[in-house]
Length: 193
Image (cartoon, rainbow, N blue to C red; front, side, top):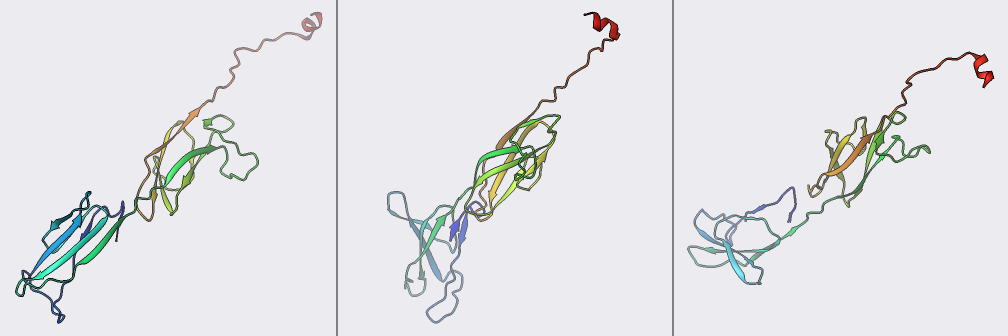
């Protein structure tokens, strides 16, 4: 049984029957749940039918028949934890959506020549992932046409664990020339010079 980001706690509930296969009535048995602490000492963590666990480890249950005083064999439930989280190593912005295009360039600046950029994350993950951009988009690559900070959160589909928001800054440089005036002259004036 595994704890993960989707299941940060588990409820352990035993099914108890007597040696003849009959179910016990409420109150006919006593429950003793134990585990070990950081020092290796056995500690009682519950005396009810169910317990909620939030840490990995071995949880042991023994039940005692209230009428006969006979104990069951101890049953051990091993709980593991998997908080595998994807890693965003970079978000690269490109001038073209087709990354195989020989004219594609990396750039994080919107210009008149490149008024659109495509943001593409570089992800390390052993499982599949889902994407959530600050724009609300859920695709791996997004198209941006405005300067600003774009963030991405990636979630592991198996464990449900998510990355911290990874930021990508897009700036804009649409400086253009301004014609202040056009001087006129006749061609005779130009020949005299």
